[in-house]
Length: 253
Length: 224
Image 1: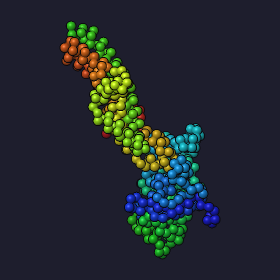
Image 2 (image 1 turned 90 degrees about the horizontal axis):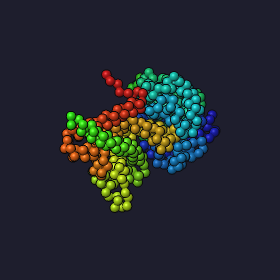
Image 3 (image 1 turned 120 degrees about the vertical axis):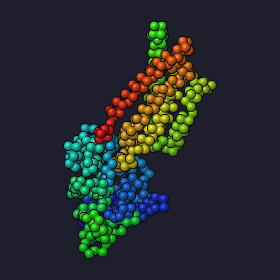
Image 4 (image 1 turned 90 degrees about the vertical axis):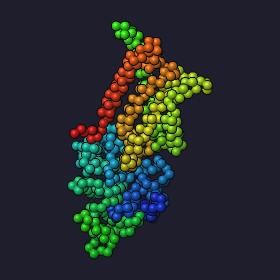
């Protein structure tokens, strides 16, 4: 369907080691505009590191990353900052700036990085907060918000930078069960709005309903890759299905 | 009655003048010391290895040399190299640089306490390292460093008395002169001590006010 066009993000043969530990070995992935890919797999399998290498929060040892046809040069600091602001990142631990209100958290990137006027940035920030359902919490500080609210603010903060791709690193893993839903529904809306996303998660049900493609990562490699229908079909003899059924037993999903 | 007149007519005017000199020593030394501390701590953590080495060397040197020796070098040593500092300026330079070295450690600790996650988040929206430090790390770290930095300022108020060793006659110097002339050591130095206590109380109050002013909602101290 979408495979004819050029991929918006292309990750080519990425390798990363910390000391003697190889965390990623020769990982490649390409994603079309509007596509949603969900990475699942055991902890320590390299999901998080993989996402972080995509926006160079972790520098890959080898391999290249291209965004919208433009290959990123890791030694060009200015270019890296440009690349990072075009790639939104959502963290498991939210990582809001604790000294700023929700509104200021969303605003600061637009003012300091994009050079927007304060009033324009405030308007846009309010719009993004409204989109994630937190208009009324704009003047609250992170310590006054619930986990789910913090994660939604962090999504608004990323969206305000107009990213071409969003990377979500287990966005609901640090949340109380009753708060997962509100964050999932924001992510679902993003997907419906056509946002290109790569998400690591342990919520198999969520992954199944959202993903265009599931990527199973283990020991730093992509082991399996395919649509949820194929990988998770009843009776499919895939590592993915095996892993998911084990998670389901523990998590009761 | 003699006692009272002596205190009123001789001790108080001299000590007032001495207190004024002390305050003029303390304020610029404290401000410059904090600036040196912020600058050196930031460079020691985020700077180029060469800058980091220079920062470490600064802290080692200025915490390592006794303050009195530093004062002597600034006042008696520099003229040998053709640089003449007045007693006042030699004292301010010595206090500020020494205080800065101690401040550097309080601030370094606070900088290290800011979670890496927030730094990653700042980088992920395109902040440069400099922007990350200035807009995300320092505003939080300075709040955390405030009690420690205040402690150093209070200590500075008292070690400013060393200035009289290089003939900058401040509060302690005036006290020494008065007491040597009248032999009323107990009376004079008790009053000198009380003046320092007042200065420290004032500084404590100011620092508490600052701390309250910059408290982040949700981080207040809740008392049971």
